Structures are given as structure tokens and as C-alpha cells.
Image (cartoon, rainbow, N blue to C red; front, side):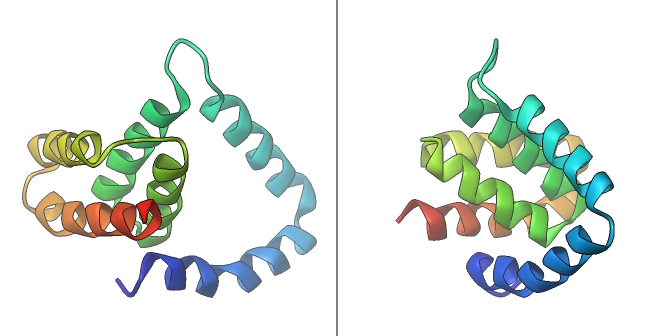
Length: 112
């Protein structure tokens, strides 16, 4: 993965075009995203860490960048991210040893 910021930048225009071509689907997804990630019984940063772990096991660099940025913005600590990576490694094995460092590096990029 290039930098997390670059990954998000590369996706910006195609996402914008798709939002214009299929607005109802994208609005529906945005509504689901907002509802699922809002503070509730779990605080927002914990939900972002869960999403980050799922992004790792799904091997999705765009998702890693997005949820690493959100985790940093919502106050997740480096230790919380490291433990999240560890749990994802437990559940996913070898591929998470590749995507885990990517997730941690993306978090650090946005936490600065």
C-alpha cells in the first residue's frame, strides 16, 4: 500500500462519480455507516477499531486507510490499535501479519 492518504485520494474521484451515478445506493450506505458508527453502547473509537480489524482480514487497503483515519480522529491510542492488530492476527493468521502492519502504519500516518 502506498500512503494511506494517497490511497484515499486515489479513491476520491471514482467514488464521487459513482455517488452521482447511483445516489440512492450511496445515500443508503452513508446512512448505514453513520448509524453503525455513532457512539452507543460502544464508543466510536472502539467501533472504528472493530472496522479496522475487519478491513485487515478483508485485505482492503481503502478500508484500512479510512478506518485508521477515523480511529485516530476519534482518539484511539497506538496501544489500542496494536491490540486490535493482534486480535485480527489471531482470527486471520498469516494474511493479518501483512495487513496488520499496514493498518498500524496507516493509523500512525493519521495520528500525527
